[in-house]
Amino acid sequence: MSLQPPPVSSRLASSNSAAPVVAGPAPAVPRPPSSARPSAAPAPAVPPGPPPISIGLCGATGGGKTTFLATLNTAIQNANLGGDQWTLTARDEASLKFLREREAEVISGRMFPQSTTVTSQYQWRIDGSTAPARTGRFRRTPTARPISFVIDVEDRPGSAFLMDDDASFKITEEGLKRLADASALIFIFDPIRELDRGDVQVRSNWQYFSGLVQTLGMRLGQLGRLAPNGRLPHKLAVCVTKYDDPKIFGHAYHAGLIDVDADGQPHVPADRTNEYFEWFCGFAERHAQDSAPSQFLGLMRASFQPDAVRVFCTSSVGFYTEPGKEIDLHDCWNVRIVDGLPRVRGRLRPINVLEPLAALESKISTGAW
Ligand SMILES: Nc1nc2c(ncn2[C@@H]2O[C@H](COP(=O)(O)OP(=O)(O)O)[C@@H](O)[C@H]2O)c(=O)[nH]1
Ligand SMILES: [Mg+2]
Image: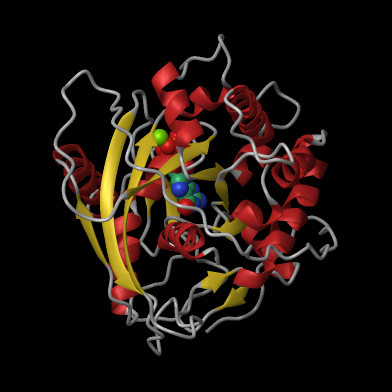
């Protein structure tokens, strides 16, 4: 394995230690399934099974929300190859169609999903176990716990989260209600947006997050559903994604924030994700010439219960490894540009796609992440 670090082109920020996010004692009860569906079609009969956990999938346009969903089944199959035992089952035709079409597109076609223009609702049942398989992803869990849950998630255009009358896509009243009623939010934080926006008028991740948080706060406050300390009641997984991108990876590696795991894939250790996020915000602020990334951190910490937030370092495509060889850290970007468009280069190896969902389920069902 070539462990020589990739070159670094600019100075690195020093890493700050972040307060660890610890589990709180009180488990929240999953909300009952919402009867609302965005389409005008009559709601189908609810299939038997565990009650859905309603998850609001949020984040800026182009951040990787649809890719995250499109790679979920591959994440599950890869975890099974590593010793876990998970199944993913679509609960309705639309969810099945998305799974089959997007997976074929990204695996066989090596294409990323087209940009999302309408809102679609999906429900997938996930069954598995945290059994401490020797080589499995979830091997840190001391005792086995059978897991069975349904995620109920909507994929919508990112501009919806600006909550702005001028935005190109305006969220419906029903969509807003579903986000307010959701047990959990997943916010896909797009680091490339921060690095590329420069001083042009491209909105930061913080503006999307702020639109979402402020609007939900007002809505839930009006309904008397904020926590006694004024915070939102949701569990929050912030997926800081695309860390595979060469604009970030070499810098993060040199900052000592990346380990190469037994599976040969570079990971940010699970107990250092807050540190990674803080490091990235400092790094990005030198490119962006404003303080939006730090504003994001501040808003994240102030708007949710401290034990209700967890940061994940996600790459939906993972890292490239030449078949039959070990990873070359100088040449491991799993994306290549063909005719100006990004294409998946090799085998798909999603990192921290299944994990945030399993962690949210655990937090909601047991009170512990
Ligand atoms: N490097 C890298 N790029 C990604 C990843 N996921 C998505 N992308 C890129 O981000 C683009 C937008 O992704 P998409 O899922 O459509 O974003 P959405 O608008 O939030 O749904 C894709 O076309 C890819 O170029 C990832 O894991 N790594
Ligand atoms: Mg999308």
